[in-house]
Length: 372
Image 1 (tube, rainbow, N blue to C red):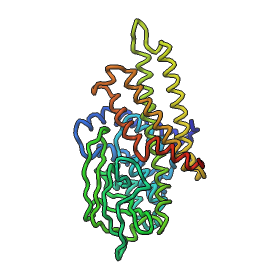
Image 2: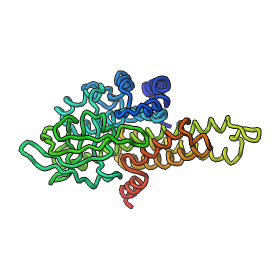
Image 3: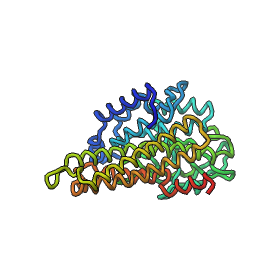
């Protein structure tokens, strides 16, 4: 476990206290039952914005606090523990990272303050199929007199239903570009999706959508490099949320092992189950080390950021898959009921495992980056 600064410890304690009190799993259940197409409660997002969470990665000059990725990861872990729905990952981490890495001074000045105060929900529109394949971009960006014209569809856009703006990854003649597009722009249509984890995904179609050269991130010809940098950070952020979801699944399972009785004694006293819990705890701590190492590598500007981020996402995916299964199995019949929260964790686990690349994708990427 990383050694936290005093500021990080205070922020983590604040997040734990607030989320437990005002945004627990029961609030997510109510959101699911309401059938909201937004994917989160506006009041919850407003409260997060007032606490400054969307601005953690935004420079102070643009209204943020610039506290770094490890600090942001602490918040995401707590959100993952309670399945708290919000655009924090999509906008506060992925959107803010894209602007910091590829935005000009003018773009950062125009866009980052809105991201920091939560009034702008900026999300990355990249995937075009049911799998994460960033090397295969078919949405076209044809050159125009003042920039580009976009045509194509993006699928399973994170927070696509609530987004005020998109960062659209498109294929131009000279390579990949990333264009800033308002959700209200002419030719933009979105279709809300009903997913197992009850979040705000949407398909977004862009038909003859104009993107001015001033709204393209990065320098000409470096779009692919910029995209890889953004996806590294996105993967680390998702891994942090996955860690929280898995850690809460473990805590729920451990509590059950300590209280459920069979044959006159708690089931945690059975040697087989005790060994299983010990093994899961060891896996959880290894996962935590991988996730925190990736976030620290980003903060430090290390040379092996891509490898560390793929390792973290792969390790978090493997542990969350196993832990969410164990959560259901050890709880037995009650674990299968909708009245119990275990199913929510299983469904969210399956969605997060595929977000920005599954285990197989990142295992292969790590191997290639390592020279295999």
